[in-house]
Image 1 (tube, rainbow, N blue to C red):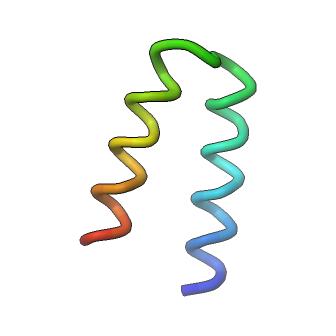
Image 2 (cartoon, helix red, strand yellow):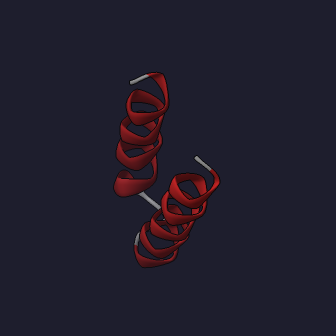
Amino acid sequence: MLCHLMNLLESYHQTYTYDTGNNLTHLSHQAHNSTWQ
């Protein structure tokens, strides 16, 4: 679970750095869904 969290955090950081606009909201929603699943 920790490994998955680290991977998710890394992907989040990459997308956050790539686009601080639209993708930030989209990624946040996507990450939230993954967490609940």
